[in-house]
Length: 457
Ligand code: PMP
Image (cartoon, rainbow, N blue to C red; front, side):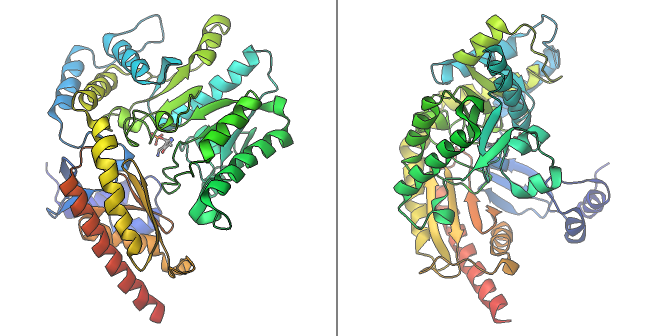
């Protein structure tokens, strides 16, 4: 039976609890039904074509409608839809995917643990880090330092590692032994000084926290190379080199959460490569399968892996869907396509510089305080006053107003407070970037007009 859009909306309201949603407000407003997608466009039930400037949820790197991935899934579903790898069994898709990932990852990474999502990857990381230090005879090295406004998932460990205050309020008490330091968000928190100096201040904050906790008690530092869900926060160039120095000084593991930055987003296979990092652990998900099927994992550096293997005995951790054959087959084909078609190099050499140029033009707009981008990730800071960078009154919800206008006019951009965030599929063309920037500019015009009108009331 085919449901009409109206019927679907009613059933949606009556039965479906959406993620990260005010259930009641959505029930009153109603959902938009997305019916199909092709390339960089999604289509809704009214037949409207919308440029997906968020690649689904930072994940559809290869774009929509790739038959090769449908074939990979169908083939695997026929052959072996599921089998676990708990009890001395394995299968070709997961082995081939593991090998491929290790080939793409930084040189010190030669093992993968698979999960069903990015959140589970971060739960895995927490357990591996603590187990590692216990095996090294330093069980007191328990503290993990994360960052305010960092995002590492929505499970209890993911939420605890992340630094989203509203999540902590609702989901606490958090996992003990996790603490957060300031984020390298120059526009929001660093304008008292230069970006370079601010980057060093933020690295210093990590060192200060290490000394406060006692250097012998700190296990690891976790961070996204570029914060995604926090608002596409690109650290100043001084940040990562200074952080690397601090961590090396105190023998602290680096966990680079590559769930968004991995698989080409910054024009390299991993955000860590872009910033010259050699992490000990890298949680991955999203772009790994371009979102076609759910799969995540942790790339494990030799230091931790060798210890777990040689000294650890059984590691009491794993998920039913760890190394799911069908998800693995699709992920492998996705990585092959990204590689064969030179998608990542094209981001680095062609699309990222082009987006940077076109995106920067939006900084001229009267309600934009900053337009920043790295690779194919961008952000616009909405401000009420360009000379002082003062924000709009919170009651105006400027970001949400702009997001809704964008959607209605045929562009998906996400709002994080008053930051508009962009992360399109990596297969976007220059012409489509032009279209995207035009749509964004028009949406900004309308947002400015609507907010001016609201302020007059
Ligand atoms: N880490 C980062 C950096 C993320 O952006 C996300 C998801 N947005 C996660 C972890 C959690 O991944 P998932 O939603 O697949 O659990």
